[in-house]
Amino acid sequence: MSKTASPACDAQSGEVVSSASVAHAALEQLVKPFPANAFFLGEHLPGRVVDDNRQMRRLLVRFARLSEVLQVERDPLPWAAYTWGRVFCEEGELRWDGSEGELRVVYLGQAHLLAEHLQASSRPVEGLKRRSTQYYLFGERPRRVRPQEVGVAPEEEPRLFLTTRIPRPLFYPAELLPTAKRVTLKVYSYYDPADGATAYFRFAGLEAEPLPTETRGGRS
Image (tube, rainbow, N blue to C red):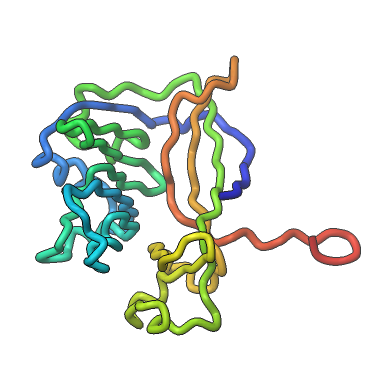
């Protein structure tokens, strides 16, 4: 997974970081401040073998819009049941880890997305630089492959990406980037300018693959 980095700047004013242990039932309240078009990325550790169920195999790692996972009724794997997960957008990210039983959550970003449950443990992000990096996600949009040929429903085609490195379809919530051949994951990292040590990082969104820059005598 290759990457491209942008110049660093001071951490944005109004950004905070907060962490706490909460009950699973509180997770829905923690994501309420996020916009409907925020992204959800979840990974589930199943308690049984699921290799005989294609739908469940796909849901073990799920990348979708927050509005989509909140509105699905009778979902075989509800979004709040994922062992690890994160909800993120340009302004902030909430992530959780339930692998040890209790749910450990961390929020990083603008204060207006911080749920009331986490305000008591929050502190401002100060004295750090912020750098933006784009990581290329695996796969490209197929041009000569019909969705049915890889076991994908036609309505899933706008999110379908394929690569020979991974023997299954990949689904990214990139329907708003219809002309992008590839997409990148935007990540903000926060580091101490004195020694360059990274203190925090968070996901911020998806972007279309940057267009190639032109050089003398032709394209790069």
